[in-house]
Amino acid sequence: MPPPQPPAQERAAIPVPSPDLSRAGTSAASGRVADRGHLLTEQPHAASALLDRMTTGEILRLMHAEDARAVQAVGDALSQGEAAALLVLRALVRGGRLIYVGAGTSGRLGVLDAAECPPTFSVPADLVQGVIAGGPEALVRAREGAEDDPAAGFAALRERGVAGLDAVVGITAGGTTPFVAGALEAARAAGASTALVTCVPDAPLAGLADVTVAVLVGPEILTGSTRLKAGTATKLVLNMLTTSAMVGLGKVYGNRMVDLQVTAAKLEDRGRRILREFLGIADDEAGALLAGAGGNVKTALVMARRRVDRQTALRLLQERAGFVRDLLA
Image 1: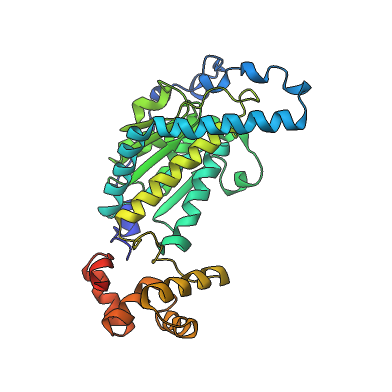
Image 2: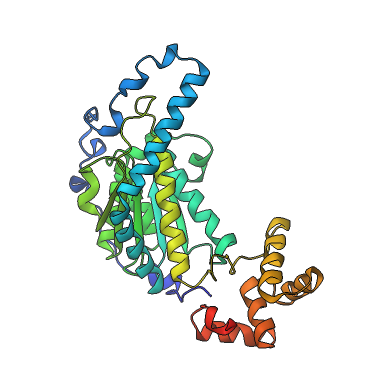
C-alpha cells in the first residue's frame, strides 16, 4: 500500500522564495559561456584517439570494455549510493515524493525510472516523478538549450509544489547543469532533502545537495558524449534508488514484485505464476483469484492465505503499512 501523502493543495501552499541564481554558478546568470574542458566527462579518451579509423568490431570491443568500467565505478560509489538511497527511503516513508531532475540524457533517465514505478510497484503516478529540462517534448526531441536556464528549473519544482517531505535528486553527468541547479535551489528553499548524481569529482553543484553520488566513469570514447558510460552508470544508480526504496516500503515479498498491478498480458502471466508458486494452485484458480483481487498480486495472496474477501485483505495490509510477510506466515 502506498504511504500517505500530504494533499496536493497543502504542498502547493508552502511558500518558496525566488531563486538565488548567483549560487547556481551558471553561465546563464552571467551571460558568459563557461569553459567546461577541465571536467572529467569532457576529457578525451586516449584509447579512442583514432576512433574514426577503427573497424566496427574494434569499436564494439572498446565500448564493451568501457561499459565494464561504468559498472565498476558504480561499485566504487556504493557508500554514497547507500546514503542517497536512505535519503530517498526516509522521504517516502514520511509521505513525501521522489523527484528526479535533469536535462538531456540525464533527464530522460529520470523520467524513465519514474515511469516504471507505478506498473511495477502499484504506487501513485506522482510518488516518483521525473522532470526534464524543456518539458515532455524533450523526451523525444533534444532541446539542449533548455538546460541553461536555472530559473526554469526552479519554476519546475515550484509548480510541482516541492515540500519539506520530498526528496529531490538532481542528475547531471558534468555536475554543472543550470536547470538542475535551479531545481535544487527550489528544493532547498522548501526544506526538501536533496541528492546529486554526477560523474565528476568535486561537482560544482555538490554544495546544493545533502548527498552526492559521484560515479567516476572516466572519459567517454566519443569525447563528451555522456549518453554513453555516464548514462549507463546513472541508470544503474537510479535503479538502486527506487528498487531499494520500494523494498523498504513493503512492495516486495522475497524477491518477487508482489505489488505489481496487472495491466498487460505479460504482467498477468507474472502475477499468475507468483500465485501458483506461493499458493500451490492451478493456473485457472490463480487467474480467478487475481481477478477477484482487482489485479493486485499482494491482495490476492492475503485473500487466499487468510481466507478473507478483498476489502478485508486491503484492511489487513493497511494495518501493516503494506508489508505482507507476516500475513502469509
